[in-house]
Length: 258
Ligand SMILES: [Zn+2]
Ligand SMILES: [Zn+2]
Image (cartoon, rainbow, N blue to C red):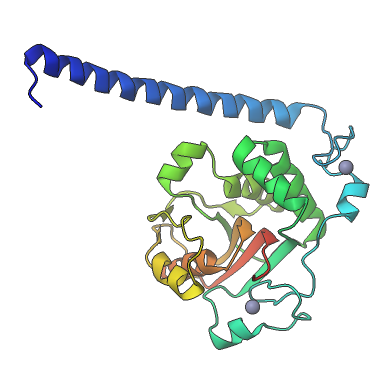
C-alpha cells in the first residue's frame, strides 16, 4: 500500500493516538484499582464470604469452619491425602524446593475467593487470606519472602500481582523482608494447560531470573495456587542457583492431581 505524505502522516497520527488511548486507559484502570484497593482496606470489614459485618479479620468463624483444608499432605509438595508421608512423585524426582505448606485444597469456596482477587481486584480477599495464614501457621524460620513474579505483560494486563498482595501483609505481620525486585519472570508460563508435567517442566526452564542477593538465605516463596508445582520448582531452582540455602513454599490453595 502506498501512502502520500499526508496519508502516511494520518496513519502515524492514528497509530500514535491508539497507543496514547491504550496508555491512558491502562493508567485509568490502574488508578481505579488502587483507589478501589484503598477503599476496600479501610471500609468496616465484612466477612469476604457471607458478607456479615464487623469481622476485622475478613472471615467469620462460621465461614472459617467450612473452608476446604488441605489435609494429610506430602510435606514436600503438599499433595493432599498421602497421610503426611512424602509422595511417590517427590521420592522419584525430588523438586528443587524443600517443603510446601498449602492451607486449602483448591475447591469451593476458596477457588471463588482467589478468582475474585485475581479477576475482580478484590484486595479484601488478599488481606482476609493473609490474616487467616497468620492465625493458622507459625511464623516460618526464613530470612526473606519472595512472591512468585508475574510476567511483565501479565502484570500490565492485571495491574497487580496477586501473590504480592498476599505476601505483603504476611511479610509485615511476620516482620520478614519482602523481595519483589530482582526476581523476574522471563517467559509467560500460564498457557500450559493441557501439557503433561514433563512438558511443563521443559517449558519452564529458564522461565525465571534472579539478580537479588540471596547468599545463604532461607527463602519462603508465596503463591496463590499451586497446580502441578512445576512453576514453583522452576523458581526454587533459580533461587537456589542465586545462592538460597533453602526454599520452601507457602500457597493458599493446592489443586489435587487430576
Ligand atoms: Zn462469613
Ligand atoms: Zn510430594
